Figure 1 (tube, rainbow, N blue to C red):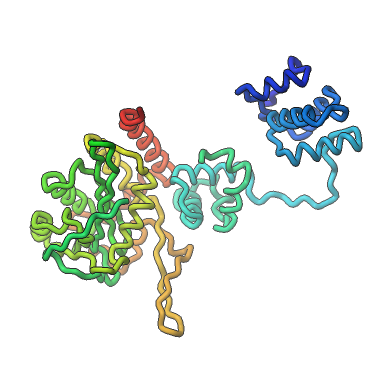
Figure 2 (spheres, one colour; figure 1 turned 120 degrees about the vertical axis):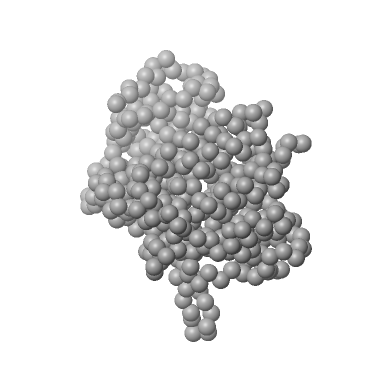
Length: 415
């Protein structure tokens, strides 16, 4: 829709000066460049720009910048062109204009997908765009699904893209002679879980909620939950619920040396489930690196750092168990490393685009993966969950639920 600019009430430099000091915002939204240039030319002539003093010329330039959205350098070039030629017009170029490979519609699809998935890295977004076309057969994504990872970052810098988008605290160590101190060695078998706690901070005497984050080392299946306090009464039931949510059998449960996990209550619960407890070694920072990385890329990114009171743990759990954990495991691609050995025998991890896949896809890529599923869990049941919605549909549902969650719990702490 074309919007006509009417600035006829502004006739003097003083009126322009008052206008610039006000909070009024007028822009050429929807107008073509030729119409903007015509208005710039009319304004220069209307205020006799070329015979004005230096300060008054500055006011005119500020006015042109504010209304058109052009930079100071662009406005200066247009004024110079008008002085030399008497016109402000678009010059015809003899250069060959190459067709754009990705249209505004493609950029909109990229921006929308980015925003729905909370702006992950380029490889992950490329994977999702490809899945939207190949897996879910959405023809709108045919062109953009072929984009390279590098060009995703180029488009993210474009003006059109940017107009479309709105742009942990470690547990103190404690020595307890419970659990085996070693790094888990799953050898490509699922069921070796990593666990860590993320505290949502305190506000004065008010204590924040705690997030319990559990991830499988091989498949990166992840389950998150929330509790009011780090105590046996709250932690043990949640851990049991989270472990039971994994579709495959669990063999080991690995944590750092925090007393919330390395205690007799947790180890007794794990023993009943025939799960072995292991804990990180001293001065070996990489022993629990995977889950700590998940804390940042999942919990902190989606829930943030702001204070949330303990009483809101049930509402957060509704969000996690109703929709968020499903999104993480069936619709959010993760990076899986390919290990190479150089001439010196040093192991190097390389993250290739083809190795990005959802945790569920990774599970199905394992040899004889059906053998690891829990009793009563079938691949047909899991496929039904994965196919319930496409990646963008469930991401939108997650965003809507998160918005409602924050809209309900954050106003109490905004004052």
